Length: 166
Ligand SMILES: CC(C)(COP(=O)(O)OP(=O)(O)OC[C@H]1O[C@@H](n2cnc3c(N)ncnc32)[C@H](O)[C@@H]1OP(=O)(O)O)[C@@H](O)C(=O)NCCC(=O)NCCS
Image (cartoon, rainbow, N blue to C red; front, side):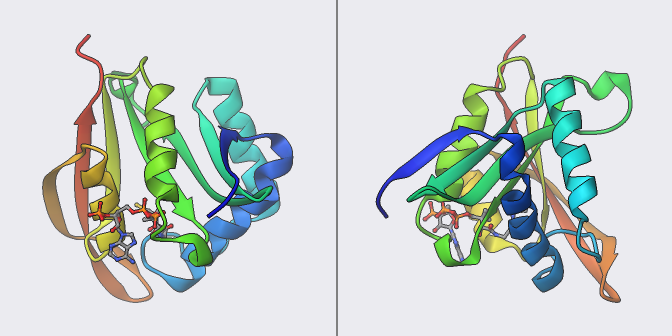
């Protein structure tokens, strides 16, 4: 691949980010929503991340956004403010070429205010488990039938990485 650029996401990247996400929603159980996210909700998601200081990065290949990654609030209790949840999505035509690894590595550089990063992964998502292992995340547990998509229960693996000793 030529001309890969990693950078912070801008507001005008939101439609491309949302298309990549919605492909995963509609074609896999790796994202546990069942309906595509509207563009309006995607802009809201972006604005909330910017307001709350949670990073969103994109990977451009030859000037087009082909992947993105973000950190998000993990759970709505203040005690969890030291943990952030990783999301990473790569366009189907650009997978297995290293973009996911580049994106998670870049995110981590912007994550020093957190103590722990967590990835919540559908247990059949071998690509995501490999990616996070490669980036130093450790599988902590697999919870059986924790979610349901398209009438099938789904096992969920939690992987974490301690990134800041404070
Ligand atoms: C998971 C995902 C982000 C990985 O991104 P990627 O750019 O393909 O990952 P990389 O090329 O950096 O590869 C990272 C690791 O994953 C492995 N991998 C990538 N695609 C794979 C596949 N289809 N099957 C098995 N392993 C795969 C690579 O071999 C590498 O592992 P290694 O170091 O052991 O060789 C991408 O597959 C994706 O977007 N999937 C759909 C959305 C998704 O599942 N997001 C994560 C939700 S938790």
